Length: 436
Image (cartoon, rainbow, N blue to C red):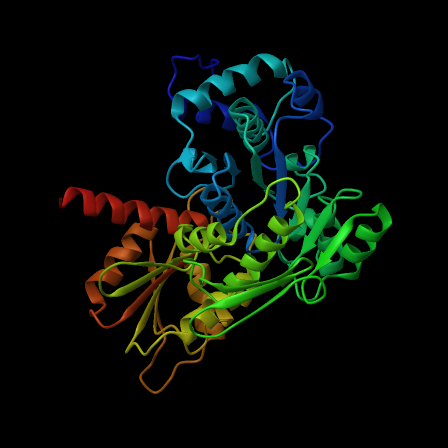
């Protein structure tokens, strides 16, 4: 494939990037470091927060961004993957980076890399770094893609690092125990810098690594905590207590834990970037993060959630269980082959009545029939013969069938892979736009 130019479209560039490197995921920093050095990415203006963890990374990043923007700072946020448009991954001062800005950085990287091949994620991460450097931000919030130690985001020496949670996921890359995975994630910590862990039960490997390198470790329950009632909540950190806080606009049981991690980081960086209490309240009220227990307007009640591992599925199941009564719950589920589908599905025993399972595209996509077999094997039927299972060819088809059957007072939950949620969300947006 020929190399795109500055006049090529963003989609042409992204298609080209997919062909560059033989492996979709190729962890390690040796190959990319010389390219980053050539691009002058050793350092750039402003403070940097790196956020790692099995679940809760994106929500924590979104809260940090909303609060710092509310405080008047210039803030950038890099997250992955995207739901609908690639530009969602790179936000500067609350706005998605434009196609033109991203393409300009792709062209710059293409020259700098020479004969070094980069993966899609490595290439796009470097583009985000270049855009953040150019924007001269006060704060850059960077979400780790996978793990920590060998993830390209870890090229950056963070002024503050967060590990939100440690659970079993990506075992082929990170190991199959919490200890192994915790050790990988702990490598975003830096000597003498704030290292925040909001997992209530952090693995010993994470604690030991932080101690070994001399990081300033902040632990949930020891250095920071929260409590709340139905109206408001309070955060307690090393610097004292912040009371009468608004609940985050993001829904779900774990969001106060994520908010606490964000506020601990803000407190740790207070000597450099002071944030007034009103900006915290405003940021929490305004924060948005699509696809994370996202409840769409209208009826039937429709929930989108990218829960794709057992830990995230347990949180989603808890959130569904905590909602008000619905006669029936319909689920659209599509998963990748490398996820623990049995454990995920078992979390929804007694919650989902009608399953619409779907094939997902690509080499990692799992067949809907596999999911149907797991449901039929693991979830016993009640006296009404529920749950039932139907196999569909695509997430869009599954959602269409659910919409035809569900009544206004029922509930629809779309979850599993990002591919599942993004396909349905895109379909909903297109349908809404065509009806205007």
